[in-house]
Length: 335
Ligand code: NDP
Image (cartoon, rainbow, N blue to C red; front, side, top):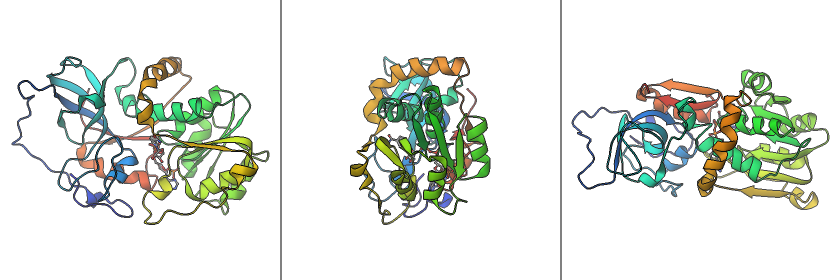
């Protein structure tokens, strides 16, 4: 439950885990709701935004004190009043952060089409994060072989897939992460050509320049702030910036300024923001592209699994200190 509205950095104590044994969950007669057992919960940065007092909706409403927070997850259908979902089937989409949920907004859950890949992937690689990487990179940046690609928060849920998609396109790829171990993972597990730890560099601008002596064609921005400035300064003519996320700004009362927007003009840049939920119709095409890569081992995915609902608050809060190594999810039950 949300215990306290968040301002500044989220804390574990902003959430509360309670046990309620008196609720008998059943699909009410005549309703098209779906009763599910939740198996995996997805920890996503946008949940922090929904924990603020006057949060604008982002696909779902902001959270209220004392109510169960919601987000993407993977669940098994126990009982269904909806013709599209049958008992025993697996779904991904919006569910409650609880062991069992009665889902009434069934337009936000989707039947899982392929069960011969890890089901937990539907919280990340085959869920919202994966689609975000595909839309924000392949569809918005029109990458070409040989182009120079820079990715921030590169080891996370979205970034690790963007990097691999860029390598598959034949690009030169550099990522950033907040620890030396993550930097190593980028280079050895995901095949990045280079990477740096942004927390230990004296100057971000110098670090980006060092990695891209000839400049950047595509910057996939997950963090905003000073990193966006450093990227702007190093963009090549006709470069593209995918404005995916700005996690460095979510906990600030006043967002930081961006100083080098004039590069948009001098270097004829394009910067495009997007919200993945406007692109859900692309999901079947995305699966067609990505599933074969997973099956033939050309795309791999790193998950960071917290166990049990009692560890969910720490897992969510950990996104904002970079505690997660790979896609952060919470395991609630066996498949
Ligand atoms: P991640 O799995 O990458 O987790 C967040 C990571 O961000 C942390 O692990 C940390 O990694 C990094 N981070 C945290 N705080 C800061 C900071 N102050 N400065 C720089 N880096 C920081 O998350 P996702 O892959 O799920 O999301 C990545 C971005 O994409 C987010 O901004 C998110 O909001 C956005 N997003 C946008 C969508 C859209 O539709 N536009 C949809 C989904 C996500 P480290 O510091 O180690 O690099």
